[in-house]
Image (tube, rainbow, N blue to C red; front, side, top):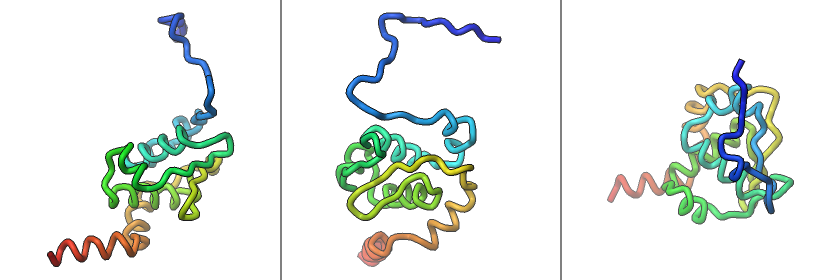
Length: 131
């Protein structure tokens, strides 16, 4: 058994002025391993940016700037988190949801994303290919 001891007592973490937290189940129940890298990045950002009800008002361009994601990466991550039932989004506000009973398989993300790809992203890709 590992005995835990504080390594640097002057730097023990405290919750000050924010409400961000990640349930331990996120790691132990396999949610973390069910996400692709961009989904993890967006999910953690939304947790950090949200209030005590999980609500965040950041726009996609601000999120892309903070996370250094291009629009396609952002859309893929957002859609993946929606499919996996980790967030809700009404086109203006995000809500980080309470974790579902179990994570969604990573394979579902690949096929669902291809079917649910944003029409705007599709038009942008199409116009870039034609240029």
